[in-house]
Amino acid sequence: MANDAAPSPDRRPADGGPFDAIVVGAGFSGLYQLHCLRDRLGLSVRVLEAGSGVGGTWYWNRYPGARCDSESHSYGYFFSRELLEEWEWTERYPEQPEILRYLNHVADRFDLKRDISFDTRVTAARRDAAANRWHVETSAGERLTATYLILAVGCLSSANVPKIPGLETFAGAWYHTGEWPHEGVDFTGKRVGQIGTGSTGIQAAPVIARSAAHLTVFQRTPNYSVPARNGPLGAEFKRWVRERHDEIRDVVRTTPNGHPFRIAERKAFDVTDEERRAIYEAAWEKGGLQFRASFRDLLVDKRANDTAAAFIKEKIRAIVKDKATAAVLAAIDHPYAAKRPPIDSGYFETFNRDNVTLVDIRARPIERIVPGGIVAGGREYPLDIIVFATGFDAMTGPLLRIAIEGSDGLTLKEAWRAGPRTYLGLQVAGFPNMFTLTGPGSPSVLCNLPVAIEQHVEWITDCIAWLRANGVDRIEPAAEAVESWVAHVNEAAAATLLPTVPHSWYLGANVPGKPRVFMPYAGGMARYRAICEDVAARGYAGFVLGGSDRAAARPARVGGFAAAAASGSVGV
Ligand code: NAP
Image (cartoon, rainbow, N blue to C red; front, side, top):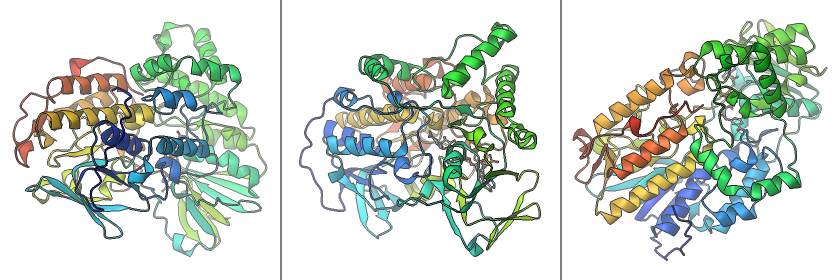
């Protein structure tokens, strides 16, 4: 899309609308969606945001050590050359406060805040088929109306606090990393218990250990991690980035996972054992998510993956001095990167500190929380603070906590009882004119998210522009298009090692009772982009256009997506 920031026309409906579009969420996706619809298409748009400021994930996740695992020069918007030229990141991986400053800069630069209602949580959305409108309700009882409902609620915004008996009796303080107090938490002199060793826990533990009197890490599933090798960016690298915005954009838009590096062409057994080891050593030294790009078959061939897994386990055993602790950390039971691979700044080294203890709660599960701490394996660990780094009800959670009612009273909860079903991750049958950004069935969490977000937002913007230009008042996917997309999402996942991990949040396994469905699209972002472009070019193939609600029951005017529109490797 062109980078045309046309002045917004003064089309400002009354407080409740009717608006052309309501966007829920003012994170990376909601901000850009507002800019596109308001400033490019001239639509009236209201953004509703639960937080008191912009930022989404980066507004809420203020836990110690919170930073992005994507490299800073790829973590941002590419749509505006001016924005690219005026913003300079300071570290290889930006820290949460810097990302929040960036998003505030974007919001101010494009004058977005005037169309955002902060402190406004959306509780319900109901479709009025006759009027072809969406009615939205907020926790304060406000009611707003719009033609299009765009859910930019993020994939990881619904905190998962496990129901451990006795939590309410705990005499100390407890926090979930995704809802961290804005004033921070002082760990000085405190005995801290941290539950969870995913990407978040692995970032938080080294920082907490530096100020706490004692840190006890409760580990259920051991995890791989590769050093991030974070550090300040030098003048030379900053110049290199300044001179290569176009090149970097082209790379992130054409790789399977949206990162600023290519996945190696070679396979793990194309090289000798010595060469493979040297490649892993070099990747370990370089640090970051690029480690998984060392060979192209790591995520599809278990034998290839075993070589990376063995290398990292050996590193863990070499770093951690206490043999028993090292054994518990290295007892990893899943293929490398088949769960989201963390990167760290001194995570395994943290267990060499005198004030850090690891508790293997897989062997000795947590029984209960008592006023003085956590009881696991019959032993009480005395604590002043508990940190839940226990993740999120990912992808579907943020959507399903809004009571969404589509055509004929069909609720999203009912429609997704057996798991999420979308077309392209963008729309749900029975919910006309409702779009999901980075929704289930899209590459989303398997991709560097701003890259996925720009693609979604621009596709939705072009789609709405096309509908308006062609006098089409509603769009929803045909049932058979959803059917074949869900089959394709499953097929793409099955071609990888990802669905083989039973305890993965990609499958919803971290939330008791959640349907086990592999949620993100593992066919790769570049391939997904080509499929979406092809669908649009064929007059929105697979969608039912115009007519009345419940159109999904009718076949689409033009068939569905064509997986052959593009080929590509897995997007992980
Ligand atoms: P997560 O990956 O879901 O990890 C949660 C951890 O808590 C796991 O170790 C899990 O163990 C444990 N856990 C959950 N419920 C538990 C229970 N009832 N008892 C004991 N342990 C329990 O969550 P996360 O670390 O917050 O990361 C979520 C995602 O956010 C990441 O995968 C990533 O996509 C994103 N993230 C990104 C960044 C970044 O880019 N900077 C940073 C952090 C997070 P099991 O494995 O056994 O379930």
